[in-house]
Image 1 (cartoon, one colour):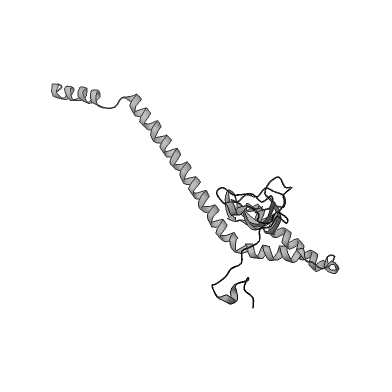
Image 2 (spheres, rainbow, N blue to C red):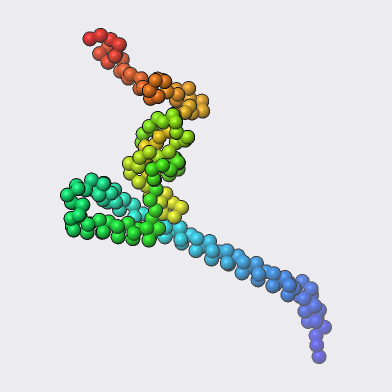
Length: 197
């Protein structure tokens, strides 16, 4: 014998509880959220690994700078020396290993100047130039993936132009195209370049 009160409760539960379609939709949404969570965690781990790799590589940059300078000034009588060639081979292997880790050189002569990647140390006026370009790379920069670890120090060549709202940015001497610095005085009569003495 069945209790009529129990039948009423089960019918009420079926009417109030979620349907099968609603449960499947909820499950699909939970699975999508979990996949998004996994993707986000994987991206964060990759970014953390790249950041750690960058911090490990940064102390090596001065060594690479010294090697680059040393090989730029190899005396002609040592170019064919086996010892010098062996050191050159070690340098090549080191650079190849760092490139394999994703380290890229930033800064090349002739490329357009980009303040996001280059640090301009000096500007060589070139009124015939079409734009601001890298004329000399003083110290190369390095990038790891999309992250700039060190900007390249460069000499920029190109026409001198007036910056927005800066009337002093134009060259003050049209004959040589180079703006001359104003004399600096401290207020002492001996520091005045116009004073005789």
